[in-house]
Amino acid sequence: MFSQKQSFIKGAVIISLGGFISKILGAVYRIPLTAFLGGQGMGIYQMVYPLYCILLTVSASGIPTGIARLISSGSGKGAEKQAFLLYGAVGVIGTIMMYFLSAPLAAIQGEGAIRLCCVMLCPAVFFVSILSVVRGYFQGRGNMYPTAVTEVCEQLVKVGLGCGLAYIFRKNLSLAVASTLFAVTVSEVVSTALALLWYYRKRAKSPLYKEKPIPYSAIVKYTIPLTLTAIALPVSQLLESIVAVRLLKGFTDNATALYGVFSGCAVTIINLPVSVTYGLAAASVPQISPLSEKGDMDGAKKKAYKSLLITFAISVPAAIVLFAFAPLAVKLIFSSLAGEEKAVLIRLVRIMAVNAVTLSLVQTSSACLTSLGSPVKSTITQWTTAMLRVLLTAVLIKFTSLSISGAAISANIAYLVAALINFWYIVRENKGRGNENESNFNRLRRASRRLDQKG
Image (tube, rainbow, N blue to C red):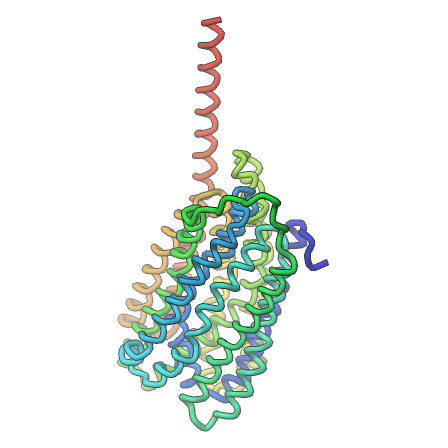
């Protein structure tokens, strides 16, 4: 059962279910974690993650969709073997970089505990890069089970080990936070081992003749633009964490705790419905890519719009539920927060509820652009809106009384702009391809006429 290719809807449901369970476990994980670490500890936890996400993005984030696109199009057989070598090396470099950047980051952010946290987390960069290659291989073959299962496995290990270590070291805040990040590393090791076992058991049989290796250029053609697209978010988060915390310190003594509530709590709740629509983004790639590769842009366009429409239909009710039941969600997930922090979190969730729609649409539209053969356009969108987000955060915190709510409002504006730009690109891409196909047809028709005249 786990080795079979699935239909678009079934594949989307499988990967969405895996992502949703993973996010639920992650949200539940925040309940004991917040109790053990408090707002200050959660702030330190979230201040480490942007650097990790940047390095992780460089070494892994573009891989699943890029490899899936190559394999599903039929032009990238054996691409995963080259990707193992290429991104394994990149993952090692990322791990080393995070280790040596730990001290400078701690100095810049003014939090000494960050150094040990980075050291505990840095090996995960390598293992996630290998894990991502396996996920991309199976997604390209239309099998979403490995991605879903390994995502759930990651969270189970992280939650179990992380809670245990945080409880053991709860009296030492720095060590408690570092130990929870070590649990993340262990979770990636276990998930990577499971994925590799799955791959070696279910990989396609090698032909009798020796195949010519896929050139690295064919892999990086898609993975590098996707990497640059994905890296925009953690870069903006890193800059945002520095800008927001430093500016907030001019108005309040609990700047780190406020940023922890925003980034570690509010974003966690908002990402729950977004994780459901991730399956649509992943499942759309093997559906759209073959049509785009064959030149059937009308068919590819219908698939892309169908994915966007389903994403919209799922995310709008989710946003309404988030807004209406924000107090209940905060009470259930983050009951250990102080009364004032709970009030701030409820306000942030209600402000950012619209992100359940816009971020979901950005996610799906980016995958559609990649499937249509234009990943660079998604990169342009993400970097433009990422810089817009940081700039707006600085302006709204510095020159208004919005405090941390300014960061939430800036995220709303940035994701809305990104969704609109991506949609415009998809429409224009289809028109461009149509005109190109029409021009090719006219050239063929003129050539045919010339041959007829000579005859």
